[in-house]
Image (tube, rainbow, N blue to C red; front, top):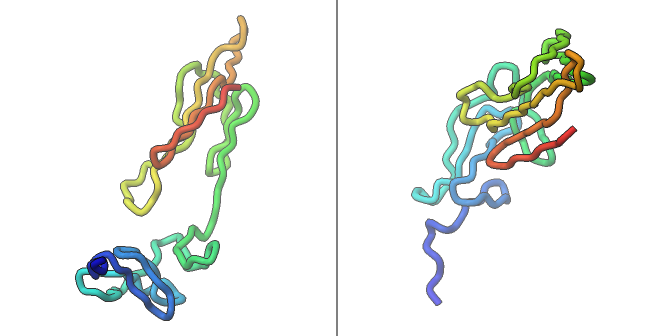
Amino acid sequence: PDPSPLSHCGCTRDGRYYRPGEEFWGDDTCRSRCRCDTELGMVVCEDSGCKPGEVCAVVKGVRRCVANSRSICVATGDPHYTTFDGRRYDFMGTCVYLLAGLCSPDPTLIPFAVTVENNHRGSHLVSFTKVIVWSSGGFQGHHVA
């Protein structure tokens, strides 16, 4: 049988194999972004760096840029919300709302959305979260309360 064309072969650098087109950090400080370029038949690197608010770190054995801080939002009870910046709201609306989602056009971030559907609880003016739906990268899940 004929050997596969070189364009299907990957690249090696520092004893590690990279798939055709695969990108990786070429140094320990995330200052050199490299790509296995099969047209040239070699690894090609260029100056780069992490974005503001990110640091270079190894996560699950892979060097990458990660956020240097975290924040969380919380939805509890009938419905009480705490936003990413720590503000609390008691909101009794009855509709479908976007709880959290990506609003940045940055192509390196994975799009996601978390929506909640709130309904009235009986004859009271208090509402509750009936359904939570999350979607990310073509996957979708839901939880019915």
